[in-house]
Amino acid sequence: MTVGCQLARMLPALARGSFARAYTEVRPPAPLASVVSALWSHERVGNGPAARPRRILPDGSTDVVLGFTPVGPAAVGGVPAPLALAEAWVVGTMTTAHVVGTAAPTAYVGVRLRPEVAGRVFGVAAADLADGRVPLDALWPNAEEFLAPLARVPDLDGARSGVAAALAVRLAPLAPPPAAVTRAVRLFEASGGRARVAAVGRALGVSRQHLARQFVRHVGLAPKPFARVARLRALHVGLRALERRDAEVCWGALAYAHGYADQAHLIEEVRALVGLTPSAWARERRTAEVVPFAQDGAAADA
Picture 1 (cartoon, rainbow, N blue to C red):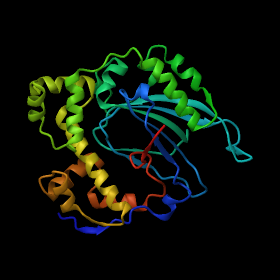
Picture 2: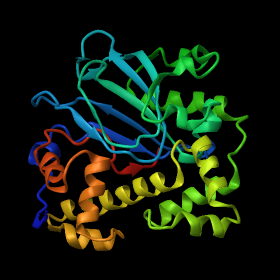
Picture 3: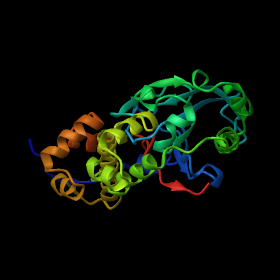
């Protein structure tokens, strides 16, 4: 099976227009920077057709996700209605893409944790959360104390600020993960998933088996699956760069640029991690009616 080159006109005018602000991602404030990689929010905006289900790619991280519903009319005099907290859960490290629907609640705030801290934050082996969705109060004692200030917020900006403030208090006494795990995560990320597990272990002075045990405990994935996800993330960034330029997509060239053995290897990995062939992935992105729910938003300063 081969996949040829094609034009990358992936983002339709609708996605650039009334729905362009559906997803927002901001960097965490300084007190959270060692634990949180990003704060994000998503809401349905604009007057276009209802959003389709969206595909969320694995990114090697665990997220805390809070769902909100409007209190009263959606907007009065152009002022958004306040939001009431409807649910709170933890989404574990993903091994493949998840497709999410569009049912209420329709406004979300998420906290994307740094990959290496999940086990410390929740006090369980991160692998126990992988590919799962667990109510926050099942993992955190006295979760109601964390959630109480978020019961009603003026808007999503207020929700993000409230979450950041509450997290700063909650995570202040958190012990850091083992230094070898943090360094290994950074090596895999910096290499775009190309770093070999054995080479990373040697660089850190630990055995492959020891590194694997630590990753399962703190990250939720063994090192090799984490590296595969890191490579997919690098491929996704490369694909987005072509999209922004309306440039030609040549999967063979992308395979070479991101360290896949060949184009067939890229196809196999995309199928396993995205759930689609590369061509189908491109078509899905090209025909999406909204900016994708996650991973296509540029991070901004909080």
